[in-house]
Length: 199
Image (cartoon, rainbow, N blue to C red; front, top):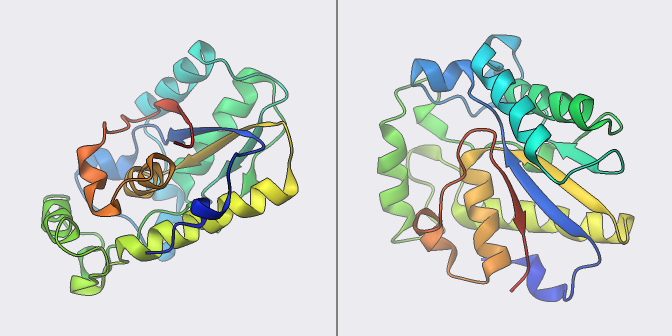
């Protein structure tokens, strides 16, 4: 495992994360995690997902000075644009490091397969069964991105809009716990905004 946050203490910025609003893939109960599908508008937000993003933004402590980075997958990007509009912030910046975890052979298949992957995660953070991106790989790319933001910004409020698994795994880095335990942390609901603090 490479948790780059172990090299970065204390943090110079405040970090908020947000899971995208309800997506068409969520509604269909399928896994969409590859760029080939994730970038398509076909897998963007549902009407309910847009409303969720608006409400979360309205109820948050984010403001016009918030700097937003987002996965470029359509469901996350639409969420980020919605938040920016509601709070009056500048348009979001695209960040491929915030993309969904790649789920290999389970792409476009039923989301019941998440459980298969998570069960393997709990045993081995390096596993790539069925071609999935390992927990170790996700934590490495996500925390390396935090280091980049630390170099780029100081005393800013940053919102990172991403996906369920990516954010669950990133949380373990902030909490400094074994990344195999990512499913033991409180899950982010669709369009939920949460501040992450480095332990």
